[in-house]
Image (cartoon, rainbow, N blue to C red; front, side):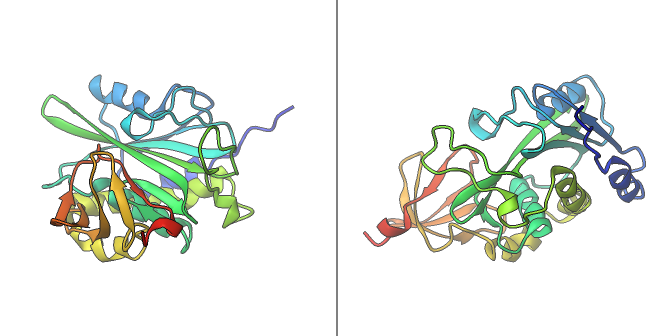
Length: 259
């Protein structure tokens, strides 16, 4: 008989309740996508702040339509729905990534705009979506973190896993680490935007100083991020700022960067 996973739902709720009295935490054994479910609820007029954990996703989604599959225990997948009204949405995914990285380990790096990396391998990803209904804006932040090592599944390099850094870490442990700081970060972002986080993000920026190429054909050296969260790229024609999260950015392999 399989022992049910013990999730820290009550503990997380108790931490968050003073900030968000109508906050709820749900854990589902299986769902198509935690982001899709919270987007459906938002469009149906359900605006309560909700943290939805999926032990298994059958149709998880990453940025730009990429698939994120999850199996119980191998990864932590959850989505957080909040009604936010920041003056500027720019840099939100960077703020989310920074919060997660700082809650996890000093060696977790950040790859613009929404990936967590360790040793040049992807450790986790973030998908931010927004729904507007009846004059209200609801943001849904989806997070997927690799807990245990996974097969490469056709990738050139196998993804990184948090147990490489924290051998005893479990998915519930990970949720307990990241949930409250993430909510605090989102509420602070609503008030102050990304600019106060710029320096902290750059301290973990795995692209800074590296030659990169983008999906829209640009090549240059990444020189950090702007106060609004744009990627700054030094090219032959000057400094370009990349604002669109739909542009994919990849570093050249380290051995090729001097060519």
